[in-house]
Length: 355
Ligand SMILES: *Cc1c(COP(=O)(O)O)cnc(C)c1O
Image (cartoon, rainbow, N blue to C red; front, side):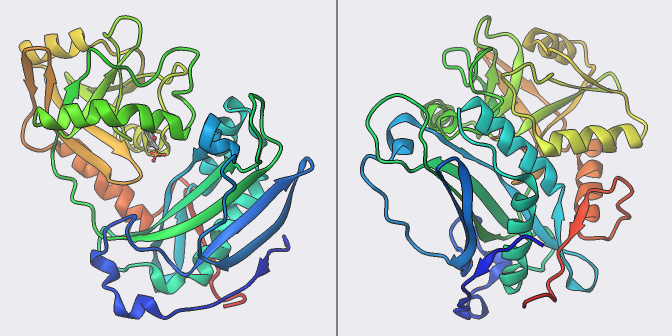
């Protein structure tokens, strides 16, 4: 057993909040998991009451952007046992991001153990209504005070949690962006690096001003190949078969994406990962073989796409994405143990130890 020091203080605030309707990212639970990287090793893993952390103005993450994050959800299964969905995949992806950004790897076992302890301690904060969950945000940043360009020698790894009411997977409208890019080959697009999101803010605001919900990112060289949208990967159904852009270094390796591919194949669909040209989507729309599209990511699970704006064209989809809705039902059912987890994705949290 990994030794994690625990300083517990339950505020009881969760009893006065309607967890089932709280907006993800606005309410935070009582505790956080923290670990420090110093002198070449991760030290002092601990659970503490959630609070502010003093930051030196020269903390390197603030200037040079060594900051990466993860996101996953804890749900309640049978007998109200807290469950995590494929947390070891998040541990692996954090270390992929860390490697790209010149940051130290975090021990994967300690990552999962930190999640489990935090969820066990703040179990009362997990909402129970359908479609709700406790969102977990592991992240790492450079907190060494130093001016100069090199990898930092000090980092913090933290996990905090935020109850998340049901996400309505309302149909989304995407704007295929032909001026700005999210990720280029050789860049940081496959890392969950903070700076990627900063660069997306302005183009997303511009898409919203045109009446769209999110940007559909195209490749950086030709503005032709579809990458992904917002913080979701994308799937298209063309002539009965599914296709999703291959990773290729500039698409985020979504865990929902991986899971959706498995569920689709299990339901008998063909799924291909390959470059998807926006021209192919336009052609399929014109010849009537474009059947549905949906975004896939932890926050909303599956979001049906109702329209893609591309230059002067409006590519429209039937009002709901029926296969997407069926996949969502399967994923949500597995996450709450209403459907058997035949893929072995669920990790249950023993919340009876050290309650
Ligand atoms: C996190 C993220 C996704 C989805 O990943 P999941 O593991 O499914 O949540 C997709 N695209 C981007 C850009 C992301 O940041």
